[in-house]
Image 1 (cartoon, rainbow, N blue to C red):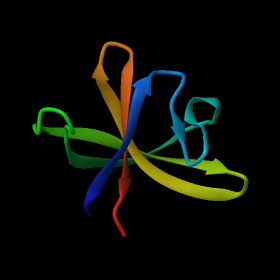
Image 2 (cartoon, one colour; image 1 turned 120 degrees about the horizontal axis):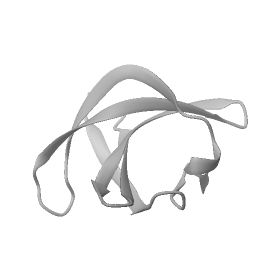
Image 3 (spheres, rainbow, N blue to C red; image 1 turned 60 degrees about the horizontal axis):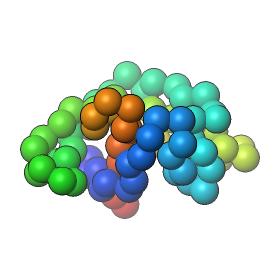
Image 4 (cartoon, rainbow, N blue to C red; image 1 turned 90 degrees about the vertical axis):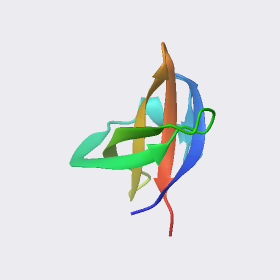
Length: 77
């Protein structure tokens, strides 16, 4: 699967799918995603999660880019 960088920001404050993603419960999918760091171009392996927002399940990959900064990737369709 191909993953596309979506956003990054301070942990606890990132908006994803139109909401503050940290206000929802994430469920681990038990999978990983190979992604490219948008600034340095190096490969990272991040866990894949699901979250339910307003009855819709969304998948994303996320990990810490630097101290207190999280990055988010979405699967390309």
